[in-house]
Image 1 (cartoon, rainbow, N blue to C red):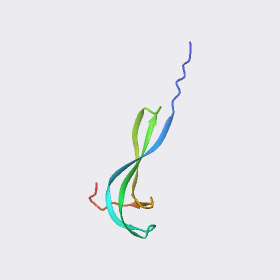
Image 2: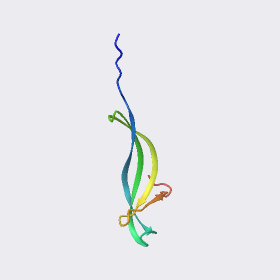
Image 3: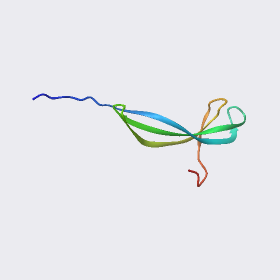
Length: 79
C-alpha cells in the first residue's frame, strides 16, 4: 500500500475595495482633500485556488496627497 501525500497550504491576503469618496480634513497634509473610502477584507486561499472572504477588517480614509490612512466609521444607514 502506497501513501500519497498531497501538500496543501493556507495563505491570507488583504483585499482593498474603494467604496466611495469623502471630502474631509487631512491632519498630515494640513488641508482639505477628497479622501478615498477603502474597505479592507482578509481573504483566505487553499493552494491559491479557493478564495473565501474571511473577515471584514473595516474601512479607512486614504489621502491621495500623502497616502495617510485613517480609520473611518460610516454614518448610520451607510452600506
